[in-house]
Amino acid sequence: MAAEFHYKIGNFSLGNHYLGYAINLYSKWGALSKVSDLKSRFSNQPQLCFLNENDLNKVLEQDLVLDWESILKYYNVISKEIVLDNLLKKLMQITMQTAGATKAVYFNLYNENPMLYLIGQNEKTGIKIEKFPKLDKPQYPVSYLNYVFRTGKLISTFDSFSTKNFNDQYIKEKNPQSMICIPLMHIGKLKGILYLENEFVKGMFTERNIQILELIAGQAAIFIENANLYAELEEKVKQRTSELDNTIHLLRKDLLYAQKIQDKILSKPESTLCGIRIFTKYIPMMYVGGDIYDYEEISPGKVRIFLADATGHGVQAALVTMLIKSEYESLKYLNISPGGLITKLNRTIIAKYKTLKFFFSCLVADVDAQQGTFCYSAAGHPDQFYLSGNTITKLIRCGPIIGILESKEYDSHFLKIFKGDKLFFFSDGMIEGSNSFNETFGEDRLLKLILNHSSKPISEIVSFVFSDFQTFLSGKEVADDITFLSAEVL
Image 1 (cartoon, rainbow, N blue to C red):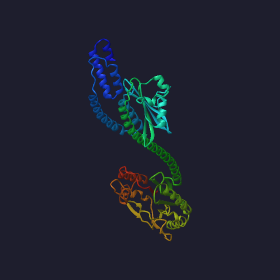
Image 2: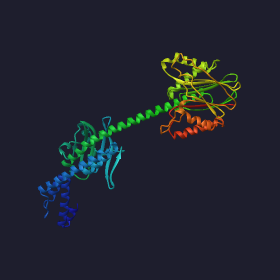
Image 3: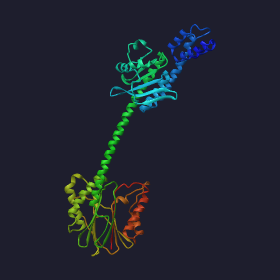
Image 4: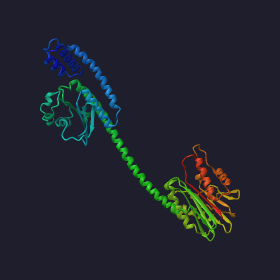
C-alpha cells in the first residue's frame, strides 16, 4: 500500500524501496505465491530490483535453519505442558504465530466426534483464546472440518484443486483469503483437528509453512495423548479419592456409633461405692479399644473390680472385649474367689472361642472396705500397685494370659486394707508407651510419680500421672489403649 501511494504521486524511488522491502519479507516468510503476484504486477516499474533466484534460495536456506531451531523451540515449550488446556493454548499460539494466522479453532475428540474446544483470535493486544465459546453461527468452514474428520487428511487453500468443489456458507460470507485444516494423528488415530485462517492475505499458508505446521501438529498429537492420559488418571484419582473419603466417612460414622456402644458397657469413670472412691481414666488408641473395665457391688459391702486388655487394637480388639464382657457378666456375681472366677473365665473362653484364637490379660479384685479385706488374681497382667501410707506393694500376676492353658488354676492373693489406702490398676498401654527417643515410660517412673503424690486424693494423683505421661511423649501419639483405674478406701 505504501509503494502504490508513492508510485501514484511520482515518487518511484521510495515506491521501489517499499515494494522491494515487502517482497524480501514475503520471500523470507515463504509466501512465494504472494512474491510472484507482486513481481508480475510491478515488473514494469523502473529501477526496481528483486532478489535473484540464487540469493532467494540462500535466504530460504537460512530461514530453513531458523525454522528448525524454531520447531525445536516449540517442541520444548509444548512438551513441558501436561495439563490439556495449557498445552492446547500454547499450541494455538505457536501455530498462529508460525503460520501468520488471524484465527485458530481447535476441535477436541469427544465420544469420537469433534467438539469445538478453543477459538483464538489475533487482536491488538495479542492472541485471545477462549474455551468452549458460545457462537451464534459457525466461525469456521464446516465442510473443511467434516472432510478432515472423515478422511484424516490435511486440506488447505494452497491446493486450490482440492478445495474448489467445497460449497461452504462460512466461506461465502467471510471469504477468508487463506485457510488450512490439519488433523492431529497419533498411532493412526485422530486426536484433534486444528483450523487456521488468515482473512486478509492470500497464499499465506505456503508449502513450507504447511510442512512446519504438520511437524508441530504431529508432535503435538503425542503430547495431547499424554495430556489426555494424565487427565484420565487425575480423574480416576479424584474418583478413587472421593470413594475413599465416602468410605472413611461411613467408617468414622460406624466407629463413633461403636464408641458410644463401648462407652455404655463400661462403668462410670468415677463413683463412690461401699466406702470406696473409684476414679478411672480410659483412653482408647482409636475410637474404640481393646481395654475394658467394670466395677460392681456383688454382695453387701463387697465391690468386684475387673480390668482386661485384649491383644491388638481398634475394632477387632473392641469386638473381642464385647465377648469378654459378655462372658464376664455371666460369672461376675458368683460367690467365688477372684482366682476361681478367672479360672472359669479362661476355660469358658477356650471352650467357646478356640477357633478365634484371641488372648487377653485381666485382673479381678474384690474389695471390702467394711471388713478391711482385699483379694485379687491377675492373668498375664503387669504388676499393679497397692499404696498404704508411703509404701507401695506390687501386686504380681498369678498366671499366664487368658486363652492359652485350659487346665490352668489361678490363685488368689489376700491383703488387709485400711482407711486411706489406695489401689492402682492399669493396662500396659502407659508403662510400655515410648517417646521419639525410643525411651519407655516404664513401671519405675509410674511408681515414683505415685509415691511423690501419695498424700493426695486419687483424682489428683491420676491427673499428675497423665500430665507427666503427655510431657514424656512430647507430642508422639500413643501406640496402645490406656486404662488407669484407681480406688481409695474412705
